[in-house]
Length: 264
Image (cartoon, rainbow, N blue to C red; front, top):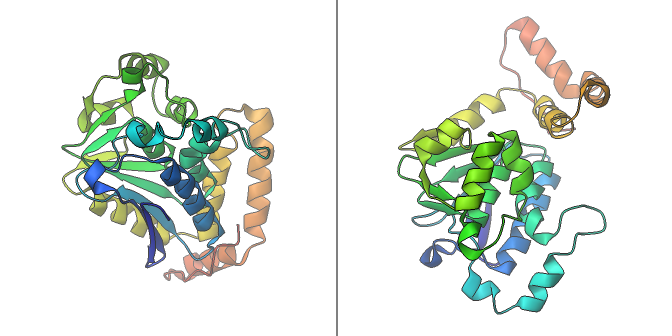
C-alpha cells in the first residue's frame, strides 16, 4: 500500500497513515488504499477492532493539493460514484469504515484537518490528544467537504455547528471538539483510551458487536417503520448463532466467555 500500513496484533488491525514528513497529507493513492484497507478488515472474521492513526506528529493534515493537483484527470474520475454505491472514491476513503463489522477507532494526534477529519468522523469512535487541533479546512480552498462528512457530522453535532465549521474553516481544539460531540474522549494518552474500550468490547460476543453496529448504521436516519424490521432480522440471526449460546451459557455459569470467530 502507498503510505498506508496495515498490521494485525491481538485481533486488532492497526491502520496507520504513514507520510509523517507531510503530516500524513493525503495523496490520491492513499485514498484508494484506505478504502482497500477497510475492505480487507471487513473480510477478516478474526478481527475484534480497528485503530486508525497517523505516524509522526499528526493524524492527517488533509489532502495534499500539491500532489493531487498533478492528477486532475484522475481526480475527475474519482469523483464519479461507483456503480454499486452512492459513494465515489473520495467518500469511500472514509465511509468504507462504516461497512467494517467491528468497531473502528480513530486516534487523533496533532493536526486533523480537512480530509483527515472526515476520515476520523467516519470512524465509530474518536479519541483525541489534549493538544490536537482540528478544522474543516476545505473552506480555505473555496470548497466544501466531500469525503462523507455531510453524513457523519449529522450524527454527531447540531446543524448550526456543522454549518459554522464548514463555512469558516476555523481551527478548534480537542476540548471544543468534545463539547460539540465530534470526539468521544480527550486525554494525554488517546491510544490507551482506545485500548481500554477495545478490551471492554472484547468481552462481548463478536456477533452481537457486529449486529450493534449494523443496527445503527441501517436505522439512524429512519423512523420506527423502517428501523424495527432491521432490529428483528439482526436479533433472529444472533439467536441462531453459536456466540450467543456461548454468551448465554457463560452468563448462567458466571464464567468468562470464550467466543469463536464473528459469524455476523
